[in-house]
Image 1 (cartoon, rainbow, N blue to C red):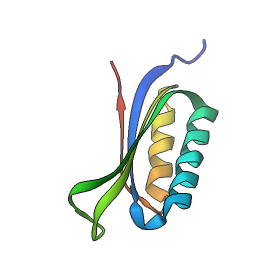
Image 2 (image 1 turned 90 degrees about the horizontal axis):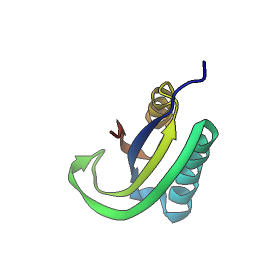
Image 3 (image 1 turned 30 degrees about the vertical axis):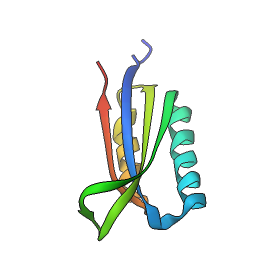
Length: 97
């Protein structure tokens, strides 16, 4: 029986100190990871925003929203990748209804 697919959205907040090139490279890395394991529906670049509270002494972060469709076991791996990647201040993955 084939695995069922579910819709997800993920927001990642990147450290602005990475610089534009590294931010773009990091987003591309995650877009590739997601598309290798599912389908990207949309990518929104929310740009640089003030954080609600400092994270790792940073007051601003670079926000990206990616909507994607993948098998239910993939978000755990995506989350693991977020956690071991330098430059990711925060990340969130939610199932869309």
